[in-house]
Length: 82
Image (tube, rainbow, N blue to C red; front, side, top):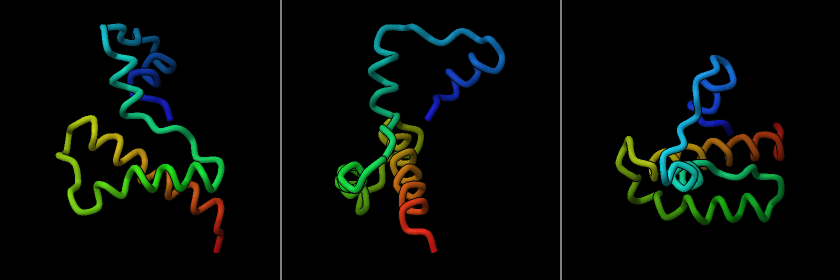
């Protein structure tokens, strides 16, 4: 999944930030694609810790939670079509 900043660069030619720590911050927010049951299990294990205590909105942790939830939902929709 592309970050909004990378997408803005692609669509409008805006520069992608290069401040120290940007790559680390983005790697903590973005999730890897889910291509197998093992990938799905790993994503579920990571997101389960937030079920009882959702992260504070607007934080990097909340962004990762949202991305993981959507990535898992997309995978399950493709894998188990009804």
